[in-house]
Image 1 (cartoon, rainbow, N blue to C red):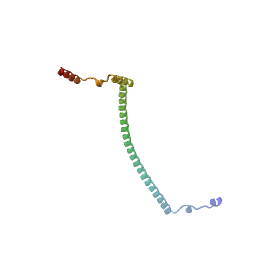
Image 2 (cartoon, rainbow, N blue to C red):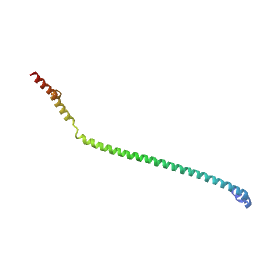
Image 3 (tube, one colour):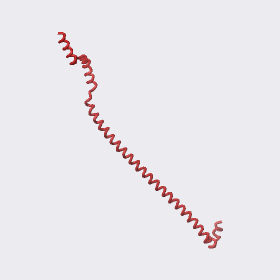
Image 4 (spheres, helix red, strand yellow):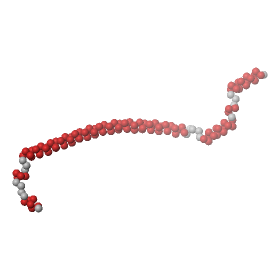
Length: 131
């Protein structure tokens, strides 16, 4: 079978199509190639625009995130300073056992039963009138 394929020789005129047919085929292929190139060019342009738009959005989001990080750092610094101040004040706060001691003395002395200046003046004035 292979021998038959190789044994059949075509003349150069039979192997080559007519020049008009060749030009039409070449023109058709050229037109397809140009359309493919135009489509690829359009896709490339759309892709570039999409990438530029995406880049702008990402830069905008990055700016917002950067501002938020700066604000958070500022707030953390402020809270750290407040915590340090509170820690310093904790040392000067009365401890529970000291508070209990003062409460016991108050219960023992009963300061609400002490005499006020106004009461003392009134008692003195009443005593002078009665005498």
